Length: 321
Image (cartoon, rainbow, N blue to C red; front, side, top):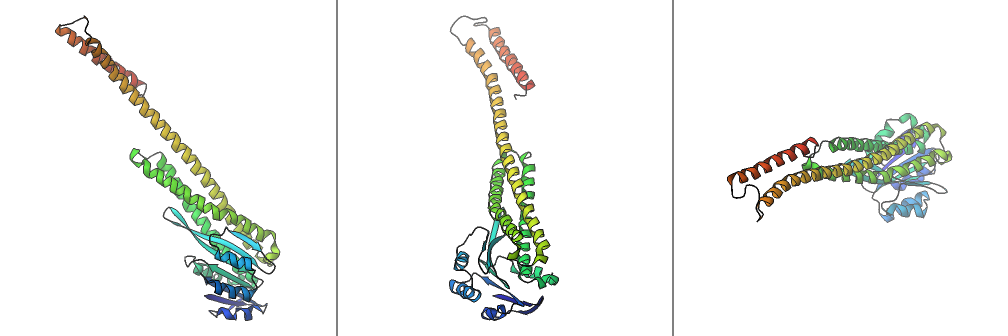
């Protein structure tokens, strides 16, 4: 467990037991933060009792894969957000649940993959904001999450542009690999969209109901986070459109390639059909010009060659071959 105590905008204490939290919270001049990683039901129940957290909010922590959301209770807020990062062609999500009271912030991580050290670094890099209490702590956390989303969106966009270039450069041997990459990127974008779109609702609620944070001087900082959230959401929507257009282009390419193949097969079939017709004609059991004579054989051979060359030249001129 990680704990911190701020008083009058200064970091006073770190690493104290969670059992002391209720003593510090009783003084409104104090601001307390502590972090829980994969807590048990009993541990979370103790925290809920210490801070007077609503039982439904505590229950939601144990229900994995919650939708990003903000719930408003009488004496606290409950927020669920996801940090995201690219892992190969997929998106890894790290859930973090946040309880926000008047002078306490509790973060509950589902795993240690969520980089809480980066959140601490952001808090330490802005000591001039520590005097704004819980709003300062909440901003640092949401700012880290929103910046991470923006980075993932940029990386997905880079992958999409690379796929777009490969779409017109790939050869027949690359077709299956390109299809797999397109499917993987589309799947990653859908997963990413599920956790970025609700962020607009979370930040919109915090901006709209300013008494929830109760620190008007932090409004510009929350506006900055909201701007990042909007940019990410717009980026994800443009990625969806781009991937949909790439899919349609891919299908059109496959149809065009099939037409090209059919034209070539039809052309060669026509070239082969003419010699077949000529030799079939000369193979009839009826008299024909040159029957039984050497010049009849050479004439049929000449007809086959001339007709085949003429058809080949005609089809080549029309770009059928």
